[in-house]
Image 1 (cartoon, helix red, strand yellow):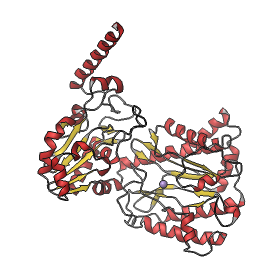
Image 2 (cartoon, protein in one colour):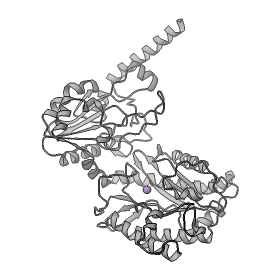
Image 3 (tube, helix red, strand yellow):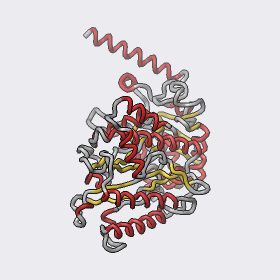
Image 4 (tube, rainbow, N blue to C red):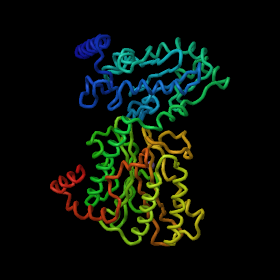
Length: 482
Ligand SMILES: [Mn+2]
């Protein structure tokens, strides 16, 4: 009892102390900052690599797209729970992060021509600070995120209704919409009058074309994914197990600075590779089978997305080689089509023609344009890439590409084990995915350092994987960094 009282007093004193601390100089704001993480952020950056000025200019550009007398309301992503007390790892909503730079849940940002940039911030109780640590509050909103006005979330109920009533249109982030503002009478009235729209159409326009600072992060994210996948390829000869390859690639990404994977790694051996978003990763890759690995990581809000397919045993069979070569040539031809003015749709249509023709020659598809082709490859040739894996999904695939846009090129073939055609082709899944940046004159492949030619892959697997002792591990590390 005495001990409990004593503990209570200690924690109360700490909490009171930290509260006093917050009113002075802001230090720990619950996310990396130049003062607390000098290795990650330079002075003048709000998130690693992105400056305060860049965040201010993003908000200016959003205002340019907002009609007169309208308001944009963007809430942070909600915390999702795994069990009643255990949350999943938090990931900030890309729109909220893009506009504010704030990486914590529980806040709402409001932007308008008259009001400027408002931030409503969550408050941490003593209990929260003791159990979860510091968070960014009203002070951080003003000093770090450069809000024009900042209030606690409790004040939203008093302040936002008048702002809503003074607006002719409301744009909000539909994916993170929260009761705190949706239940306001003013919001509901606006909704009933058809004045509420999604804000993504506007934010996606801004996010589609990456700034030089964003491209630097995209390139670094791609480079980490390439190095990690190369290490995993080496590892696969000795450890041909889907779960171990998944663990290996995640380890290698995080050891190189990635905060998390962009999605659960797809590690499909043999027929599992023909399941496009396979995520069980619980089988051994059989000797002689291919393994398909689709992986990506996230670096300070920017994701990578990369796929390679190879035989962990070190040799492609002639059947695998024939199909692999078709996918590889399609990948290379489609990459060449990437340039300003082309569209994902055009490149997609080209890939369908090329794959259909190739599959007919191999004898898998009888006539071009058959529905069988679409069963064996129901995917798009690619998608936009950025802060989200399927970035800017409101932007049509017919939109002419512009310099600064990053897309994926990912032709594939997915022949299930129950395929009712030639037997030797059953249970083969192949995808070769690269990230391509559109430049003024054409393209730049961001994942070019990860080998994809058959001879190169076989040579790497057979020359760098002898037992994967520390010596060969160190050698392969040198290869990856050279
Ligand atoms: Mn992809």
